[in-house]
Image (cartoon, rainbow, N blue to C red):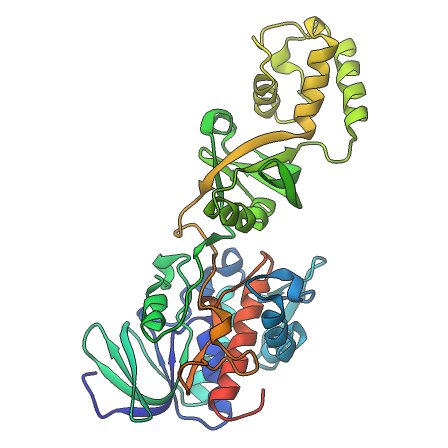
Length: 417
């Protein structure tokens, strides 16, 4: 571009979900809006959401689904643009919603590209310009104007800026975390950052042999031996640890605890429908009925064969060639205990490349909740994942992107959100 004289009313830095939404509503209010995107196209990360289906929102979204320093902050923003407004907005643009029993909302087409397409068409209709391959290296305010500089030395001036560059999660899709340092240089505080909605690494001794096995479990996150969070769902065993929806849900608590040097464990209940007493009776009955079988086949018909074998090994019962009839009452009780409470010490989470969202971010004490305007720099608005707000798995993070983008876009254009 190399055009130091180019000036716009509002520059939206970041062409992700929050940035695109902010641009739409600012332009609908009559502002001259330009989007600056570091990738070669906008919405790249949006295309990957919901495994390519785009879990647009969740009809049950409320403050309890969000994390960060202050739940009330997220509540104020979400209340201004709730899930029903997001559904109505996309319906008006042609997206027929598919609402599932758990509240998740997808486009009926099951294509994330449909969501991006209608957003791009609306931006084109509104005359919003998008400058791609513009990676912002600097932001400063000079004489009531913002000067935005790229690494390629391109420059754009703007009356106001909406900063929605994303966090550190999935850097290959565009959000590499560079925005934190830019805002830090302007005086904003950044809370500790760590990956969230991500797989958990454990000791590989038992999980490596279970790679690829899925099992419905009760899942508990334990901090220093104390249960702190419970989830249920399908757990996927991997060569490095544990994955699956309930693991993603507890990953924030695991990562946060480890950042505070706490001992964090994931405890799996492989048969949550049964009490400990019922399982003891069940195990003893199987011993009686299957006395002629070896231990390697003890759980055939209950668990995946490999899962049953690894569980017995985890009880310290060897060799698997032993006959079931040789199990003592104490060993039967140990097996039942392991089924109900199989503990895996967390060794960390997978990297930013695997994470769906960033935990931590720009301190919400530096931002006005009613407008998302910076308390430090007038005319600078901050939206989306870069703020210290992150949601549960299930459409809540896109709902945060829509809501925060809406509030910032309306406020920057001078309209009441």
